[in-house]
Amino acid sequence: MATSKQEDAMVAQVKDIVTRSRATLIEDLAGVAALFATLFVCLSFTSF
Image 1 (cartoon, rainbow, N blue to C red):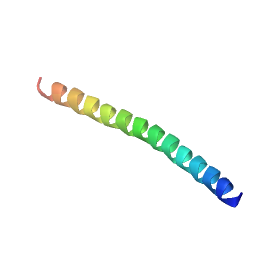
Image 2 (cartoon, rainbow, N blue to C red):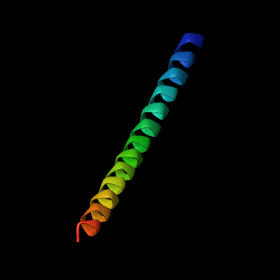
Image 3 (spheres, rainbow, N blue to C red):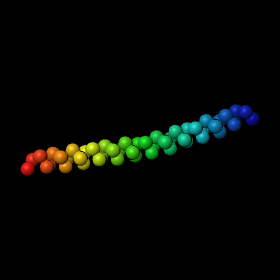
Image 4 (cartoon, rainbow, N blue to C red):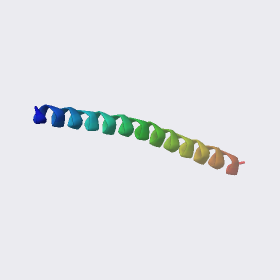
């Protein structure tokens, strides 16, 4: 019976890690997109 509870706890931990990783990945991608947009805007303004 103890192994079942341990397995349930491990599965719950893995699900939690995957959920957090997915949220972090989305935030990182949004940050990278914002940096590239800022770089593009700054470079386009300096060409005038």
